[in-house]
Length: 341
Image (cartoon, rainbow, N blue to C red; front, side, top):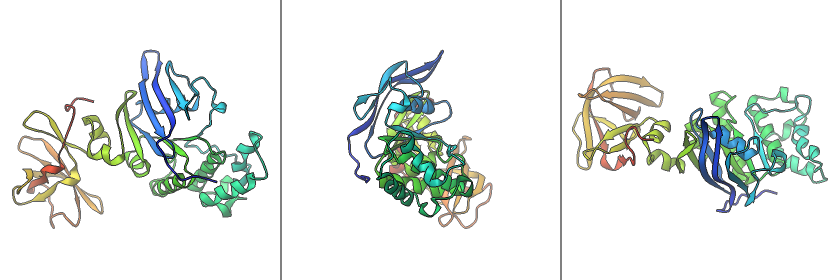
C-alpha cells in the first residue's frame, strides 16, 4: 500500500513566494523545494513567516506574488479542497461522537471515495499508528497522544501528496512529546509520504527532520540537515537560535562558532592543536546528565560550557578558576558578523 522509497523528485516547489499584510512582509520572495518522501521542517520564532508559508501551501491564503507547485502542477490559485494536501493541526479536531474507526473513515466517506478496499486500508492505518485495539473507542476514552495518532491516521488515509503539520505536538506534555516524536518519524518513514512540519522547537525539529530551514523575517537564513545547521551555522542568528552558541572573535575580526559541549575544563593551559582561555565559574546548573556552566573571563565576556557529569571535575564551586580548552578543529568560521543575520 505504501512506499518507503525517497527520491529527489520534487513534491513541492515554492517559487518566489511573496506575501505581505499592509506594510508587513510576512514571506519575502521565498524559493524552496521539498523532495518526495522526506520529513521537512520550517523552523523559526513567532512572526518569522512559517505559519503564513504553510497557509499558502494549503490554499488557506493566496500570495501577492510567486507560485506553489505540487508534483509539478501549479496549484497557486486552487482552493484547499482541490489540492492533494492535508493539514494536521495541534488541536486534533476529532469528531467526539464518532469512534476512532469512523473518525479515520470520515475523509473517504465525505469525498465519496469509500470502497470495498477502504476497510482494509483503515485497518492497516490503525496498525501503523498502533491503535488497532482502540478502533471502537471514542476520542474521550483516549490519551492526548492517542488522539494525536488518530488525527494522523485520518490525515494519511487518503494518501495526500503532502502532509502539513502545524506544531503537531504543542498540546502535549514534554514526556509525551518525546515519545510522539519517535512515533511520527517512524510512521512517516513507513508510509513514505512527504511531511512538512511547522515548529519553533529546535529539539523537535532536529530529532525528526531529514532537512529543515531556519526562517527569519520571511526569509530563509539557512537550509540543510540538522547536523549541518547546528555544526556549521550560516549566521550568528542561526547559531543562537538552534542552541547555545559561543561566538569568538578571531584575529581577522571574523567570528567563529564554538558549541558549549566542545569545551573541557582543565587546570592546565591548551596543548598542541588546542586553544583556550582562563576564567572563573560564575554560574552552575546541574541538569542530571550534564552540568551547564558559565565561565567569565578577565575582560568580562562569558563562555558557555556544557559538560557531561562523568567528564566534569569532581568538585565544582562558584569562583573556581579553570582553563576552558577546545580543539581548533571544533571552531566553525562564521560567514557573517556578530550583528549580521
